[in-house]
Image (cartoon, rainbow, N blue to C red; front, side, top):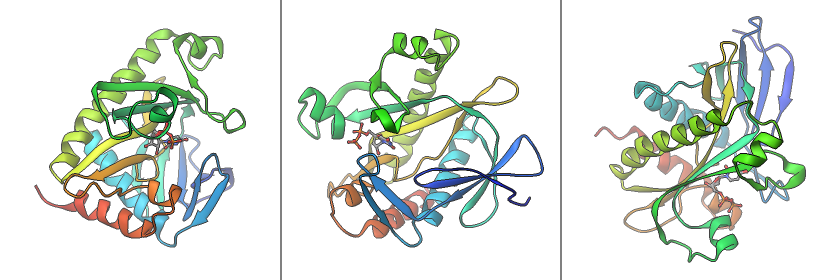
Length: 238
Ligand code: UDP
């Protein structure tokens, strides 16, 4: 399958049309951004690492019955995916308080939450991705039915259950992550976008070392090494 026109260029990926109207090609870029693209960087090989990591994690989730947009991975940095209408909600799932949650509510960084928290953020860089509730989602027409929001929460929790256990077996603490969903031509809700250290926080269970994009956000260095370590753990046989 060949790339045709560039349909969209985001911060970390490009999206291309193909000869099949229901299929697109995603290209993973080496670019890194943080704080709503105020901080920009690039790490050679990061795109390939995220492509591989996301491929592995989507395959794991598919195997557990969670439908995703991934059709197949074409090469180091390209995936063939189903065309979906992206739901403009960032679904954030948290096990441990850190980042914007700690800042907003004053919960001490690193506090284990008493239960898994699912939050919705509006996917809108101009507005700085504000946190939103069910009513905001309906007022903004982000979904046509409140039941879809329950499905997003349920899927977020299921993804968390699967990934948290998978990473715990590999001595990584899945602190939080962001996922996006889309609706395909049959009206089915599919996990879309990517799951990678760009969109998750992983803390080493033994050393507490951060192995994710916080290394870039906080100038901790060794960004690529951290992503390589996450991939290495994913590929460990258990
Ligand atoms: N996240 C993301 N994209 C965003 C915002 C957040 O992938 O636009 C991820 C982030 O990597 C983390 C989780 O969602 O794993 C929660 O992020 P948080 O709200 O704490 O935001 P931050 O502290 O990064 O501003």
